[in-house]
Structures are given as C-alpha cells and as structure tokens.
Image (cartoon, rainbow, N blue to C red; front, side, top):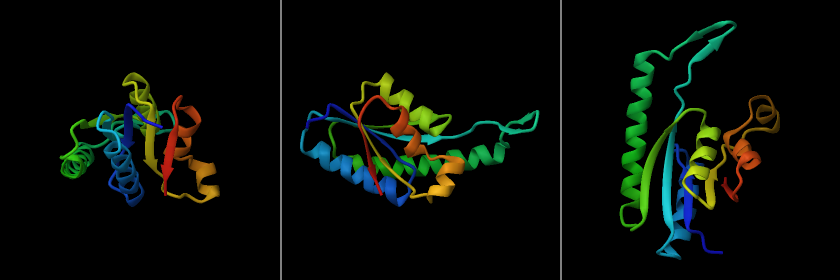
Length: 143
C-alpha cells in the first residue's frame, strides 16, 4: 500500500526511534510520500482539587530545550528526504496527534509504544492506545 502522508509522533524514546526508522523505510519506497515528524509538548496546567496552577517557567523552559534537541536530532535523521518536515504540537499528546493527522490529511500514523503493563495502562491510559481508539486512519505501532 502506498501512503501519501505519514505522521510520526517522536519523543526521543527507543520505540519512537523505531517508528521513525520504519516510516523512513516506507517513505524511501515512494519518493512522493510526505513524512511529518511531530514532537508534542504537554504544557497543560496542573489541576489539584478545585485549583489550577500553570506550569513553572523553569519547567516550561526545560521542556522547550528538550524539544529543541529532539527537533535537531530528527532534522539530522530526515535531512536527505525530499518531502519531510518537523512540527511541534502543544497539548494533550494523543489529542494533538489525532487533530494534526486529521487536519493535515495524513493517511498513516507510525508511532512507538512504551510498553506499559496492562494494569498501568488501565489506570493512566497510553498515548498510543488513545490514538488507536480515536484516529480515523491506520495506526502502526512499533515496540
């Protein structure tokens, strides 16, 4: 199957690196395929009981620095691909990925999975699980 636009959520983890490798393999098989690598920054406010707190500036700065390092690494990896770009998304990771895929006419999401235990995934959920449940396009998970 030939895809026109592949989205790879990337956070620097081993599983997201495997997802990026797989997406690059798919893209190299078809030079007309667009590859978008997305790094999601989750800067949502912290909510405790009835009070909401913004994330401290130092934390936000640290997250941005880590994000910039990830973006630089991705650009280095995808630099020789003619139709590739890197985007930074903000918000809840699963929702940001789903929204971007829908709004950008992606036809495949290739992403990593952290491999949470069944109990932990049941308690906190996982980004990949939520994307699989709510995306309207195929999702390929790399472990």
